[in-house]
Length: 403
Image (tube, rainbow, N blue to C red; front, side, top):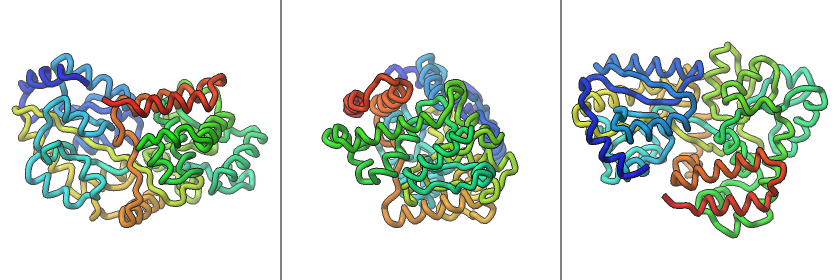
């Protein structure tokens, strides 16, 4: 982002005050259903929400920047970037006292990510997504007399047996985010939370260069042997579809996949399972869907009404139930959620109580470092010639970048 965004934003604001455009990257079946829930909640709040969809969050972020630079920004947008990055470049909307009061019902780890530099609320969370989840096709596992693996050694043994039987052990999509989620699951499962924090968040040069990181990178790429060539042309929902079609056994992705399983009528414990990634032992590595509201004076009243409506307990619950994940509010009613969501909620609350929640890298790293990390992992995954040692050097260089 550049300061040019600030000038372009100040040109915006001529549309009808009750009409708000939302730019987002939600395009799967369950995601589209959640957007419909969003629009309905907006109408109840007296706001006409116009949704502009772009497939994939990275593509949506790219278009969002282009819209600012062209002087036609939306009133709000889905983004996985830390709020401080936007606050440094463009004015954000002050969503007011009613929204600020609602923040008391949010976990501190989330509420702290929703305020601008002056402490004003400028974003609204929709739901919490666990990223370190292993999705398993129980029908295929049982047919082979196998169980869901609980650690990485067991995962490799199980995947090798499945491959020997002509089955696709691991479905994955083409995005850099899919590779990053898999790498994080390996790091947390093999090296633990403290190593993850010091190496990937604090960018400790000694850890990034040590033998343990070499082994983690090697194991990460070894998982490619359990995937297929079709990964280059599918997204995460396409990978989930392979499990639903009985063509693949495992997938590592966020619990938005739960929405796809529910939409297909599958039952956890009977048709599929949703366990913490191997060796992660209940750690909750999470991100949350958030809408950032941009400073547009003519639309401020509508923005505040919409933000307040989306934070209502029943709306938070409906959004999470539709898309997958868990409600963002502490006081949410979980009685209508399936076993996957219940398990995630229990681990999230336990992690919050112990101070052991692991917020996603996308919300903690600057744009350059985060983009560089994903690029290195994607290139290393795709290349058979790049060594783990070479990847380590590039990883350290990427994580040293500052915006």
